[in-house]
Image (tube, rainbow, N blue to C red; front, side, top):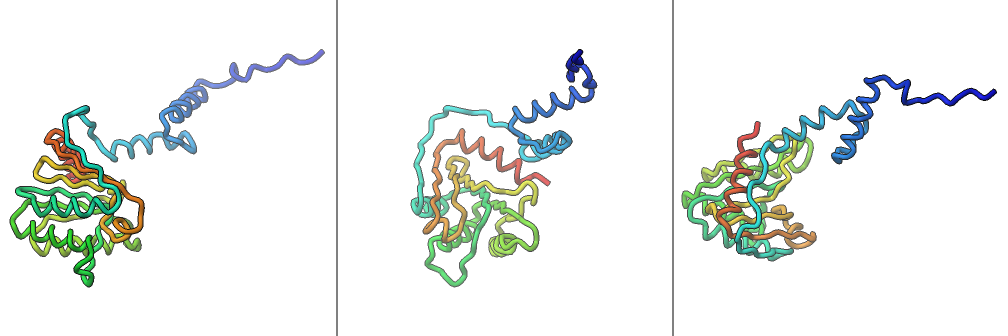
Amino acid sequence: MPKPKRDLRSGASGKARHERRNCLWAFVRGLSLVSCDRIQKLKLLKMKNLQTRLMIENVNAQVTPLPGRAFIGVITNCVREARASIDIIQFEWKWYHHEHNSPIQQLSYEVLQAGRRRIKIRVLLNKENPRHPLTPINKNTIRNLENVGISAKFGPSSPITHAKLWIIDSEITVLGSHNLSKRAVSVNDETSVKIVSKEVAGEFSRYFETLWNRQ
């Protein structure tokens, strides 16, 4: 006489069922966990990433798409016309000492000039491990900015500072994919956008303050 099939579910412990539910919850949430013991670690990383949420939507704004090389001319003009403040987040900012006429270096010079005009400028750049080539590139930029009294520093190495964001005079926001490098404005497919709106600038100012003050 064949043995009756065993109901595996009935033999599962309460702890095992709880672990399966946690795994299913994590998968649905899109965490792509390899094992359930990483759930808590990823929760902490998510909290560390950004402890704020956006509070506005559907505001009136003047929006200008900035694909490719259009970005560098517009952002340079915005810096040149700044009256009070500029907050900047960049993943990469290269300094071309020997290429004074390059578009990126012209932008860098305008930022220095704004600093000399006593515009309040804060710059947050990404920091990788000491052997990563990006770290000395951004460190060189920080040194050049600080030489004219501009506040510039590294963000924490984890999570990385990957945003590209400019907030000018609490009214103009420029954000997108452009790093400050020659490749970004001459080779890569990049795109950004300029938004003229005090409401949008205010929201991204909250975002900037969160990253600027993060330890």
